[in-house]
Image 1 (tube, rainbow, N blue to C red):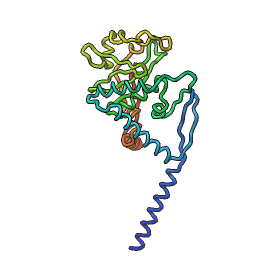
Image 2 (image 1 turned 60 degrees about the vertical axis):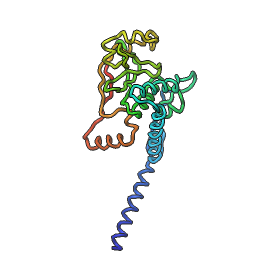
Image 3 (image 1 turned 90 degrees about the horizontal axis):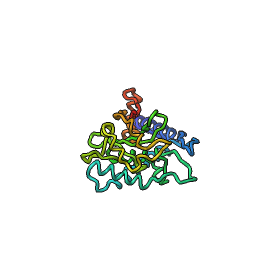
Image 4 (image 1 turned 60 degrees about the horizontal axis):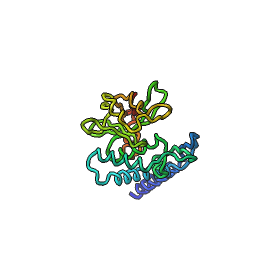
Length: 248
């Protein structure tokens, strides 16, 4: 019995030592500043702690923004308004920093795609599957990031950077298929003729096609449980991550 206890203690000590060594393994994260990427090295346990901390903050912020909201539409519109109000365009002379979504929220400013990223992430944390992707205009050489949120089983289109969304004739927030079927919805937009990359804003909606999505949305990668399940399935070859796209 005493021998068995000694063996058990040695095994436990070995496991603890191995875990400590593993968690102190150096890992690399990347940060882009004005298009130049630099690598930052840190112990694995620091990266893990920061991952969990960000998950908590996303949950807290999404809950705070949608407090009092009942319907999915109310939640999406609350997050849209919050994102537009709190993520400002990059101030002149300030760097464009490409890193974690939480840092964009803390900085309070970001590029167009970063605004979309914040919005999609908070929608997902509020229980509304969402993602953003490139919507191409004309010959597909110029694009504009747009967000897509699943409300009532239908993918609806949003642009938090400009606080834009559309409504159908019956008053519902327009989905991809609605815009595909009726271009007049976007012609009424207050910035329809505003130029982005020498392309009128409304033209980025002309090539929309039905949404296709992968097994896992980018925003869901920030959720520890979903990320763990996905990584296990991927390691076992059960599931592979494919693109989440608005093909158009």
